Length: 95
Image (tube, rainbow, N blue to C red; front, side, top):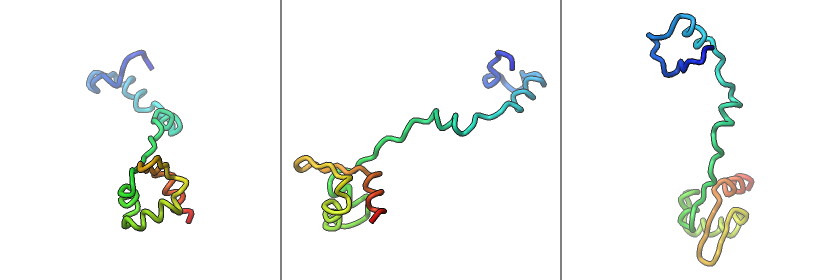
């Protein structure tokens, strides 16, 4: 294809040859599209209330989850509780 920026050119300004080449050009493969997308960021919930909202349970049940099945996904420093959502879901589904 020519060194023209066809994407920025109005269709009425393209020649038949340019339009035909543009329409027949191969689309980027899925692997190329995935390489351009950034990795998803880690999600966290904070405190017992965050665990309550994540699993739709009461505070008592969230406390049991924190001390039991979610132990590997919880980081606690004093009164601060941070729960990795992806890891918590993985542990919860494993039980």
